[in-house]
Length: 430
Ligand code: PMP
Image (cartoon, rainbow, N blue to C red; front, side, top):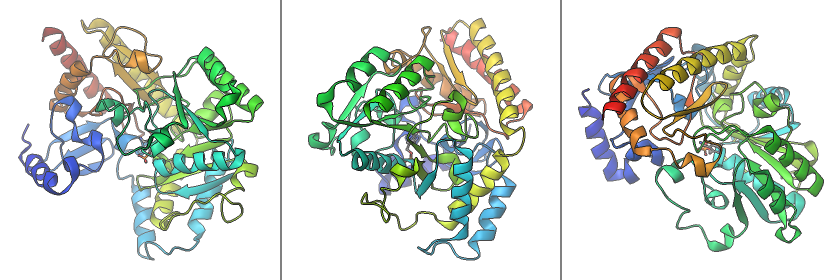
């Protein structure tokens, strides 16, 4: 595979951008290669600057549930752009998107738009603290909630991938207010939440973890989490930045029938433009400025291009049958993949729900951070490079999800399965 142009761009990028990338995992360090620079993408196919084509299972890390450059999304952006790109004043588009988001996600009565998932989670935690008058945030090992100071404690995503335990630059004074406990562990959860000395304001959770690879929660765990937080007056925040509009129109909360107090959204609601959102019960949301005392603001928040892209995308996913078809396709693909894995002499465990999945290179079940960490990252790196050589673009880390989109056709999936079978065979021989 020719990668000369990517290589020379990376060389230039490293002179002026830290690590040559604007988000760490993109550097592909943990999979042992340099990043490919993208020229364009359409549907399920990404084309790099050297002209190589790949079937894409990253989907920009989740937003591209319709595939790339969906005509309705692009048209909405183009139409909106000619009338101006930012006003710092309210527009009709943000009202329409807020109504659509509140109508789609069952626990949302009000929603505030921000510009990234990180802003959404950071703001939701501030709101929970302001509302309860308490300080401590409980999170779960291996969950990632963006890069705000309070969350960089046993975090997932790039923090695991790069093997960074916490982060320099985050004061002890802040981290002492974050407690990280094991995912899917009801006993530790109960013991922690019932400890009155802890002054817990909120629990933030990925209702399906996507940032230590996909880890599906046990229903007993999520139910207990809801019961205990309700009983103890602790705000329950679902971080649905990945799962929102992915696992169902109403996200994981609709799929599991468990309603949080606050929900964080991102990725899909921006149609591929930078958007995040947090929302929930009216009583809590009314504490935000200007109605209430909890401050949160943004020059570009509710940006018209982002609102237009999000609206266009949500209009498509709200159509009859969208999630049913996505589910059926993902189910078929995961079934075939599991068959290939079972026949290969490479130990793997496939975790999947809806259109998100991770194939872990470990024979044992993966139910939390500790078991995820048993996966063989080095083997994943070889698999990643082989898949890339075979024309399939996976996430450049063992601890991320692969996403199926509405644009994946049977032929794309069949080709990906073929390449996977070939790669597994090679791994077994190596
Ligand atoms: N929460 C979750 C669950 C995420 O997966 C991510 C990003 N992958 C974030 C928050 C942070 O979002 P962003 O990268 O847009 O700041």
